[in-house]
Length: 266
Image (cartoon, rainbow, N blue to C red; front, side):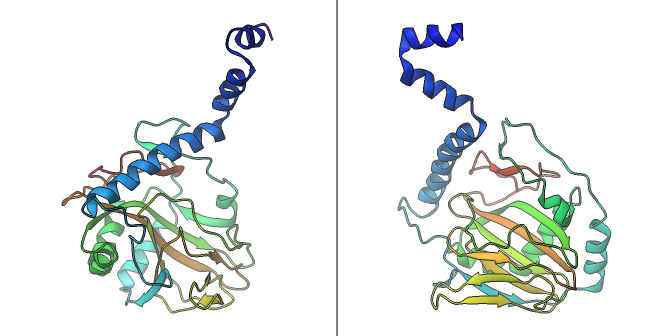
């Protein structure tokens, strides 16, 4: 109380209220995110010939598209093996490399989330199957993989993301979802609000069905699982100025993004 009175007497009540806000973690996070978001916008500024173009990445007017690939049995075997890994890594609230956020731990109660697998294995898989697609979305520019997620939704489980929403990722982001298992209406399909028709669409498909979407613009959700499980491999990707991008062995689960959008590390 004495310190509070001294600050108010010296600098005024408004200054004290600003200090109080800065002490609040959520306020600090939003402030830092705003600053980092501008760096990511600057990355787009450099990539696209010094012209700010909000349309990048451009998938299509619907903000999403799908593609079907065949998954090798050996790849599925590796996925099932990696799903047993639960080597969760959480960073402290301040990091010199990543923007750290309050990861919803409840999510880990709803899904079998894997962590600690070989990121290079899955990033190589992404590059082998979707390199051209991603570079097309980024108008020929290169990209880096910010996150790789591997998880399984169990039968009769609620999806904590079952409300339609857009994501708070930074400028330039694309998400990719790959169905490892067959997904029907009973196994928690990915669902979107079509930007063109304004109608709800549930994306069903066999193993290998892949969804690319602009999560900052497309309203989306995951439906609750009824009597079947759903295994998914997912990626978060950003455009990159770098011609060569290296792969980090591990990242914190609670890292929203890299602080440096110009990094040469996925």
